Image 1 (cartoon, rainbow, N blue to C red):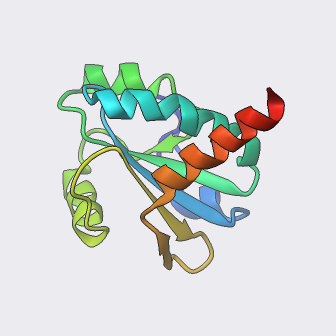
Image 2 (spheres, helix red, strand yellow; image 1 turned 90 degrees about the horizontal axis):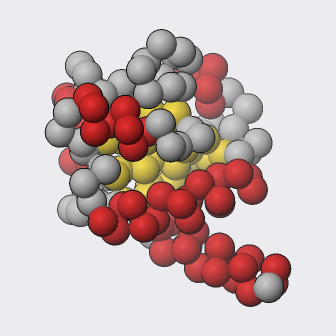
Length: 134
């Protein structure tokens, strides 16, 4: 996994997830308007719980420049943009991704699937959080 858009900082998956409870797989792309609307919501959610969760960006960007620009705004990890097409396709197929943005939650310890409704759940949680704060 990579920690920065240029791929200069990397971390082994096992190390990135060793103290985490949940893994969020975020299927998204810079060219997708609903993704661009959801990313700031997810970023706020991540900041609140990042000690127990790790988010991994699974990009559908069509080139490196798009990926670097979009991932550069994200505080979490990503699959590398180059050389991982087979992994991304297998993940999307396994998780039955039919459109983006999609947010899948896995148990970090077991790898078991927990929900594919996390986008809606995160949005609702952040709306509720905004109401309490306001």
